View (tube, rainbow, N blue to C red):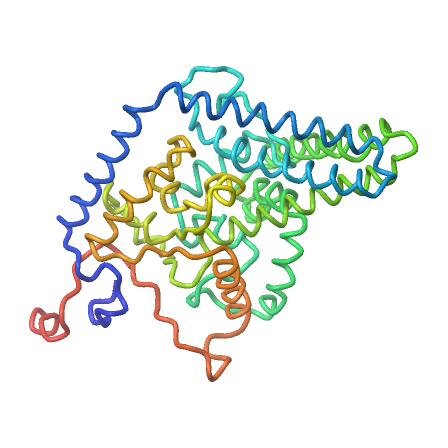
Length: 390
């Protein structure tokens, strides 16, 4: 952080190094409480969700056998979209995070689960679990931040390409599962010579095999099983996948893109302590407020802050954890960013549009402070004190 920066622009200016370590210990204690209390009710929860999701998907595909009838098409498409969202968000994403590994059930385990998505599980776990959750919002290290195609911070160099950033983001939203697969392929790393040809082609082969499998299921096998309803069943699958992609993209955007969420320089995490890592997750994430159905449909990623603090704890416990985490925010005078879905989506898209233009291009645009977490987490000092020390 800049020593002469105004205190009101720095969300951690009032914290000492000891404050941050104390904060980390309190968050560790919350984690320990949940780990100690995991048990049958949690296992019953995930098993019941999986059973429900598979029942809805099977029933919806059965209804789509008669998709020539408009009511059947609507019901089947809505059910299939619901099933795909639940499978990706509340089941696949969370199982692959290892949230249920403690059950020692080989059918619900991060090492065996393969989801209904274009990206192979093993590759997704590397780019998401290992990279994104380790380097959350660190520019140049967390490729989830903008998916490698967007400008997400004022300090990033602007180019003319960024003018099409809003359009690129919309297209990415429509084909989100394929965008994530391309991101997992790490094309940029290969083009820069930081990945050998053999590894790149191995990844490409795995992704293409997964895409072929998914496409055959949705766009060949199930339509053909519908007989005369094949064209309308094909359209239903296209629509369900589009709905799933748009919903998933919106939820992910709300987690790290709204105004007020902090980004970080590479050097800011050098020698990072446990407490500093926790603090980065707290200030680099944002929540979505709403009711039980919304939380369920987001895979409980509406509790994005809690998820980033505890990515391997069962998702059904985030609602229980949230008030405790928010109390820590309040006690340490940190801003807990949360809002309704429309507000968070709007804030994220506003940022996408704003950063597609050069800094200061809009003369009436509100000045946005530089990100404040630079270098080590050191307490803010008044200008006079800094000058005296010099």
